[in-house]
Image 1 (spheres, rainbow, N blue to C red):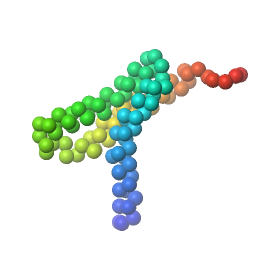
Image 2: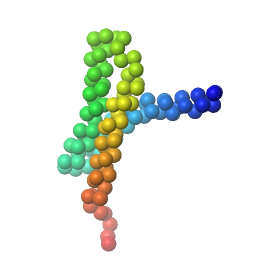
Image 3: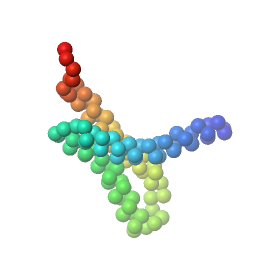
Image 4: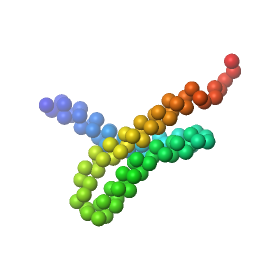
Length: 102
């Protein structure tokens, strides 16, 4: 049981810290590299995590005991944005111009 806990705790920590961080960082990087409508679509993928952060802040201001599981909420609200960004990347991949000579 100890080995499982030792392996599971870092994985959970990476999820709790990593997914919300990536849900904010990756769209920003995409917005810097992509052009035109792709830039706006990349910005739109930050909407779920932005909504959740706003909801947590306003909920905690109204009642400090609410949102006790906000790390779990952050993971759950990060997933749709990351999924949408991955779909955008996959859709954009064959459409981007090739660099190099033929």
